[in-house]
Length: 523
Image (cartoon, helix red, strand yellow):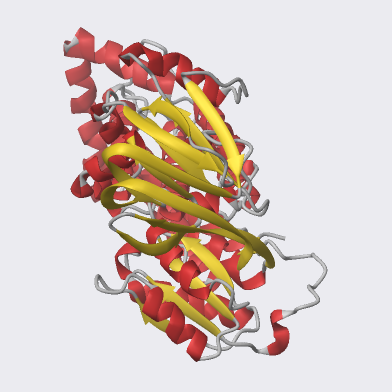
């Protein structure tokens, strides 16, 4: 629906408005088929009259979905979208308010009487076609479906949301008929009218975000030089590889790039070989779409080459993208990659026992946090996303404490106890949790945090201190900063790099390499 041309959207809108007009004309002139359908409303109302609990239930539905509730819900959604996606916010609120306002004019123009069998409780005498409740709930459900289509990546969750919205529309439609407030044709006509408004709104004012570079001064290093771009894609992170290719190719052409070359990752090669192939092709920009693991592989391969990396977050955590203020909405992230500016960020070299020399961009960890990563059920992760990490965290809350020693910048080792130790190049986790609030991607340093809740309930004050960004250190939480860090434990521990589990071991050695990588960020 979002990919339809303006002409197609206008055609859909005109067809739906015409159908709504036809339903109204047929209802007013008592065409046989419509009259038969409308007659079913009398039987439905009789059922309600015979069951007191149904009357109470339908009244609750009626009050809970009146026009002011619909507008209030649209206002809340628009407020949540406005900061990052103002066009989507304007679309949601604008379509709902305008549709309900125009519907008011239409109902006065048609001036159809209410059904004669309307229940006397809260008797309505205003004109009947099209139904206000049905129009309101249908237009709200429609704009919410557009928002879900834009921002919810997981097909299962999208389908669940669509089903819930459809059931809500059916519930309100039944309410109007079972209370006798409207003829069935009033309800159907209202839903069709709302559908037409949804398509017309998209044709006149697209909810898709405009380019973040629109109206800004061109960069000195303009992409209008018809330069080369390569795309490294983890194919399991997008629903349709072909649709993703079509989107990127079209946006690249609009931004002045040559047609991209494409490299798909495999289980055997999660991105390193593809990045090197892109470099060999002479790419000026490599766009990578995948999770933090795929991004790490590509960035590690391109570090020090001077080739900029555009990140399209397609994973569950997407921590690097979040900390670089790259939008999680795929189309907006592609726009940043194509039209943004380059920023040099640090890369962290990692070595250790049972571990080949490698790098990380986000963070490394030993203990509890690594146990979370290894304990995530992949099937559950596919269905509910980052909440799978929350479930795994609850299972691992009392991960055994570690005895460890840490050396920062070559100083003497200090001894500690902790349930987890995290070394970070970024400060914030999902849900904007400030685990390492002083960390920065371009300061030439890494930040270390040790967490040691001694009992189950100790997690509560620890969480409060993390969220409040309190700098005090003690046995519960300890922080360090340096350009190099060495961590040693007395037993093999689970370890992770950028959210990917690696082999268990007793040591991690990390060295920050300042400004080693160029990434595309918003202007």
